[in-house]
Length: 424
Image 1 (cartoon, rainbow, N blue to C red):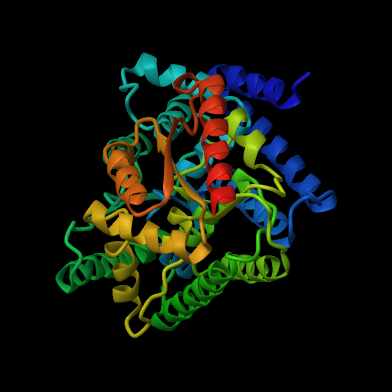
Image 2 (image 1 turned 45 degrees about the horizontal axis):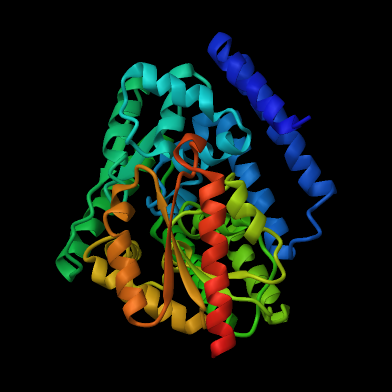
């Protein structure tokens, strides 16, 4: 019997009858899992993988148990300001990942369909909105979001702000990557600092923010150092643990936990042996529950994901003179902002740095940002010599993917990479 699936079904059914009890049940399950991770860590993973699994789990528990101390945020909101404010980042995307991992997402997807939300909307947002409509996910202290990368934010956050009746803040990031854009975003981030002070009834000193930004830079430096070692070192990992890196480089950026994660990751990569199989540059999100992909990459000592552009870009080094301009520069210069040509160049440089044999771009259902650019990325990278596959799928909704088709395409792609390696 699949215990997780059974637990997810119980949570989903209970959410429609009594959302408070369903939330308590969900919290109990997550707390038990946290205890298990503490007493019986996954020994197949290196220290950084075991550590980050507990950090993210405890953040989810904190958001569910004490929502009055949490800000509901989109993934690209600068976590450094939240760390300086002492607030818990309560992420739409991360919570949806956990609900999908608990296998209770279908109830909430159905809820969204009945409410009339479009099926073409990002499933991460549809799962969270469905859970919000059911009353499973609690009311946060405030909402903070940005237009950076995800168009779903522009529907989800105004709706949730209205539904919950909480204060909200929006960060507008211009398309142009120049000093004027950085100044414009920095001005908004200064306003965000005042917003957080008003909401949280706690002052944020410039010294505290500078310290958090400096800590964020230290973490970015460790992350960049381990990237430079990836040509000759391939630690064992899982898609879930690689995805946790996205959480650490954005929402918990500037925290002691994020810094410790990058320290441990650097040590793990440094002592890991070189693998015998192909090394992959992963682009965009990762499908946590898609068995055909999990079977190939999870705990593999043969094939390795050398880097993910989403995470590598998030651990971006910043100028520290003015913390607001530093954070604004990180947002403006994100590869998810501006021309797709810059993202292509970034990925090409990253592929060369890790000595990638191939590139794999996950085209998540409903993500207009990546679906519209996927063929451009693939063609441009292949013209430069990097064999690239576009993997269509869904990070949360199994109805939008086919394991059989994905498995066949992935196996054919990996066989092609093996042939190229032999030729070389």
